[in-house]
Amino acid sequence: MYVVALSQPCRNPAATQSQQTKPYMQSEKRKKQIAILGSTGSIGTQALQVIAEHPDRFEARVLTAANRWQLLAEQARQFMPAAVVIANEQHYEALSTALADLPIAVYAGAEALCQVVESNEVDMVLTAMVGFAGLAPTIAAIRARKPIALANKETMVVAGELINRLCRQYEVPILPVDSEHSAIFQSIMGEVSPIDKIILTASGGPFRTFTREQLESVTPEMALRHPNWDMGAKITIDSATMMNKGFEVIEAKWLFGVEPSAIQVVVHPQSVVHSAVQFADGAVKAQLGVPDMRVPIQFAFSFPERLQSSFERLDWFTMHDLTFERPDTERFRCLALAYEALHRGGNAPCIVNAANEIVNRAFLEGRCRFLEMADIIEKTLQKATFVKQPAYEDYLETDAEARRLAASLLSPQ
Ligand code: NAD
Ligand code: MG
Image (cartoon, rainbow, N blue to C red):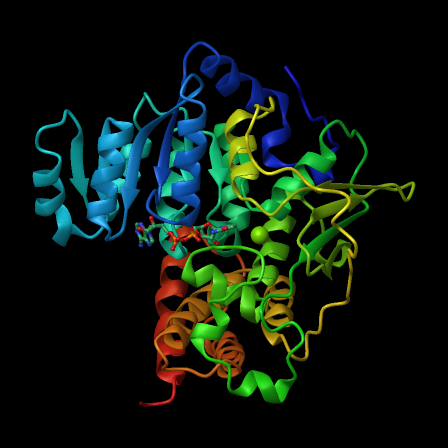
């Protein structure tokens, strides 16, 4: 069994022997049974492609969605999970009617999301739902000792300290799915020395070269056209503001136990170097590849093994220019706000996440201008109640308060 043996300060939650050995030894005996939270989304559908490519290794045990019950029913018919959950209870009747002829249990509601991941039959939970809503089912999965394939970065942004504590208590590994964190994880595999510095690459999004004046008038349609990645709407807008990269800094801090000052964001528009790690001797290890989320998803599923794939390979002779730039936190203030939240600590990242969810949605719906998003997040961070050592309930209260505050700061329509 492959074991990453890093020293305490830079250990990934996936990296201790006791955490790793148990779940992987168990799963070797049979196909890994995977619960996908958010199977109808960008990550969820790509995860199902990975499962379909490896029917001898993986099975979809549980599939869930928020609203798209028709697609969920189609997926259930194809993958025959034991259970499906539709978070929006209004669609329960339609979904259960659509699946009436199949031996698939159908549930609805947010609580059911937490319950299905606890099933004895589930070997791994892929958290591919969006936003704060991912926190409760992730905690339920950890308490049930299920290894987590973590796509839902908002969970680590909101409550990274709590999640790490629970992972230690229940001896649960987290396998990163976010491409940058998967790259960092792959770069530290086999290392016994601490990380000196993380080089977190960022595409820079669709507005990388825009002036502040140009940013004044960008539209949701423009923001939704990401140059390199085809992702869900929320994360695509977060990439355009670079809040996504700010969240990834916070995610990296908690996953790899490094201080924010040791995380350098580097804009790399080609998205070939997925991230890198520098060590004490100055050596840098990076993971490269064609931008394709199925690679990190598959690796989270198969870790510590690598499985054959038909995914596109890097063509070294067409990569003429790999470029690297310093990020501009004046034009992309959301990145600076995420760092500020990290420095403040406590519930500050939770406040920023909640405010961001409100302004992100408002921008998509044409109720907020692009540059206004950072203003509202900053004001919410100043106004919301600060809690230095939040418990789970504090996160719920903070999330609700910050959402109210941010919504009240939106210009009346
Ligand atoms: P998406 O919008 O395409 O899909 C989200 C999925 O979650 C859908 O199945 C939806 O039905 C479900 N969902 C949304 N809200 C829910 C709720 N309140 N309750 C239950 N289910 C809910 O999103 P995505 O782009 O796949 O992103 C999913 C997560 O993965 C996000 O946290 C994102 O930051 C992260 N991530 C995505 C990518 C990517 O390439 N798309 C890359 C890295 C990280
Ligand atoms: Mg990413």
